[in-house]
Length: 639
Image (cartoon, rainbow, N blue to C red; front, side):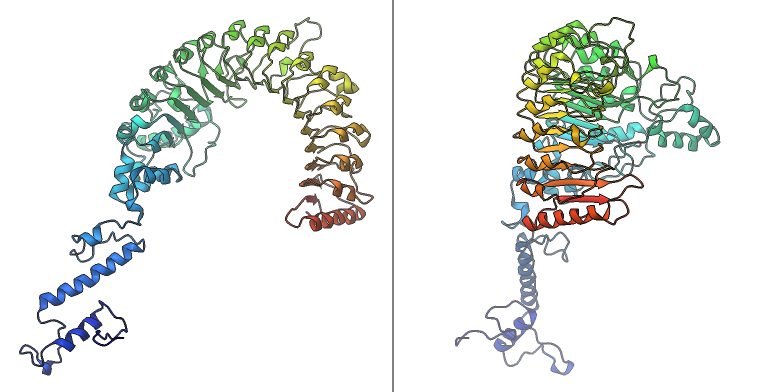
């Protein structure tokens, strides 16, 4: 320390601690001070007056407060009142998050959970609350989880389930009003208190009413009825029990859509069927959302009439429709003629000429498509899975923009369930050859006994799903596949699992672009694997799970592009010789082998060769667990 500099007890050149302030003041104070009473042992004051001493202590604490701020510690608690008014303690440091502009904050907030955006972030500070209160881009995609009690807890406030529906809806609308101009996508879903989206299946009134009648207190009866709402979504419209009142009002959806209807472009309602099932015209509130482009209604649990769908048909800008219907459990008093969902394909659907995506899933009333479907000339995706179609109209071939066609679970499209004595037209007319943009077709579980001839004309096809059809019944083999299928030069994924095949059709060898071949759950033996499969230059994955293989096919070692091999649950499979030929596959990532059936396990000799392969693969690339083996009773897997 240089001459002339103050010497402090803590060893610093400049210090604001009380000890050093007292030491410095003592060095410069007068030799005699009249107010000092040494006999009482008072501590000497560092300054000549009490106000000066208090000012020094205050400055010391202010500096400490500023240092804490610069280290990122928010000083939100009051410090004896005098520091909150001080500008040094209230102004945000340039390096703190409070100094960031609003657009940067919103970009950071976008990475947080939607529930935290509504309930946690507004409580951090007043600045964040003001940023999140307006119509900012963060609310462009809004998701509201509606439990049975509609307890949203918006802005951190807790809404008691005992409050009336109108009170709870008013709280939601109050929160939504200043933000509604920014909302473009609204997703409504229901979950239980644990956040699960898969609510338990509905029960019938016959099961619930006896339980309800045993409750004598009227208040308790209504309380139980409200708590049981998720289980009674299928029975609210029953006229036999009017005394059981529903908590939601008929205009619940209309109230919720009111603030956002002018700007809303996407609406998804998932497992909130109660919002739509009240009243006679279920979709009437949707008619006012004129700019709607995407409408997705999932888990529908009521019948949709033509008058209901007219409200949707009036939405001229609609581009995507998803109507995913549930079906009541068996034995709930429903007949085949009175299932939930559409009773037939709506004629008003043809008015939506701007539509590109159409999904009508699990509507048992749809048995045929109208010829006028060709008016939907912009349609790119058509999904009619698990309906009851018996044929596809020839006019479907005029949808030249169609890239995806999914008719899974329509068993009457095939010959399996068709009467032999009736001459019926082909379910796949030759006019479908006009679908020259089609890349994906799903014919899973369609009751086919042979592959439709028209598929061989779809030269742009990339994915062909034929799972769960009787293509190998009666020992047809190659006879179930038309020769033209081999000319699909762009086909990359072929799924012929669960088709009762005893051998792989030889035409598969000529699918030069094939990358994934799924042969799971057939009756294919080692002799049923043609050697020409090894010449497929781009094959990356082959599934031979649950077949009749007795050994690991040696031809697998010749497929040099192979990355994944699935050989599980071939109960007769044993490894009687080294299988190091799999080491010749440079891109191999996964080899799945195992036996999960009871009373099936590996022989000791097989275990030795499998361990040998696992060791060799591990030595080649220690970072990969290529061989994944499970064997019942042997304490494996090996990795």
